Image (cartoon, rainbow, N blue to C red; front, side, top):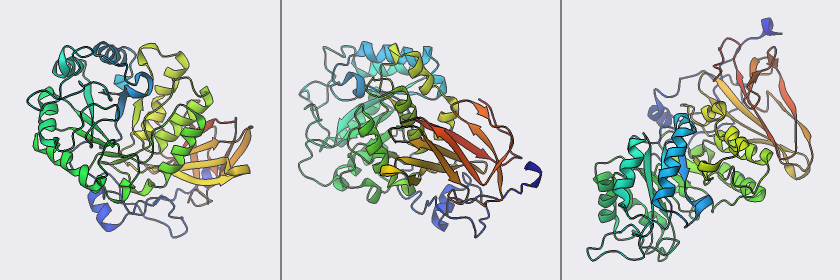
Length: 422
């Protein structure tokens, strides 16, 4: 079969002239046969990019909220930084250590400045940032585009310049900016002032908008943030995770290097889902080019949790420099629970996820035509969870039996392309 294969160049991303200009040299100029369906639209690619040199790929790291909520202190943050390094997760790209809500005192000081809680962060944020930086990592912090944070600490609304300067003086590298107690002011007016304030400090600070998708930031956040939440908060359940994946899928054409759709942090390892469900969670977040922000206690991970989070081949899909968000392209069966998600990668490759959201094992098959490929084209197929390249080259279709709530993930590569085994 392989000797008869003719590779047809893929152009699965339909760039507008303006978008192509922005993305050069990231994206190769590829020919597009008229028979190949243009299903991976990126016509809005690049519209939302805050040009601060950050987020060329989706951010990776850890956030305190999903596991610890308000039960945080400087010891937890230091030990987490230590664990990211000692486990090897930092070397895989998990380099942001992000403190969520509850780090500050209940009120500002007499100078109007935010103050770290003296009981839980007695050494201050500057000392903590220095510790994290010495580990080769970056420190993130949290505030709110409202009068108060969601846990009723002081917010940054009308204090943007002072707070940005304070964060920069501490050596903060990342700001998660929430949406509570916002006085009913439209987010289009509340979020840009902090962008301007951060930029004015001269420090490169990743700006993560946490607007919950209420006002569809993919439609208004032009040049505001490096990522923007498209959904409400995730919870550690199958229903929450799948619902959020579907909501985030709607905005696929807006993501790209410099700015990413954010369906919230990872719940892998927190105990509310099965191993198969967590594998699906990690696979789909990676394919969607979502931020990979760990939400578990990385100091005490089970081996199966580490196995998922350290899968270098899945991480490479997320961090692929082409930066095109994969999306759902096929839903079949009862309640459309038999699904195919896919997206183009650099090097004329395609990632394909066969996701079984049904209550029993099913065989999921996708044709080249559905993927936008010529049926005569042959590909080498790599299984990213088994870390195996399937024997021979495939043409026409790809199929596999997938257990309930599990996901199988493959990369299709032209036969002439050598596959890098990580």
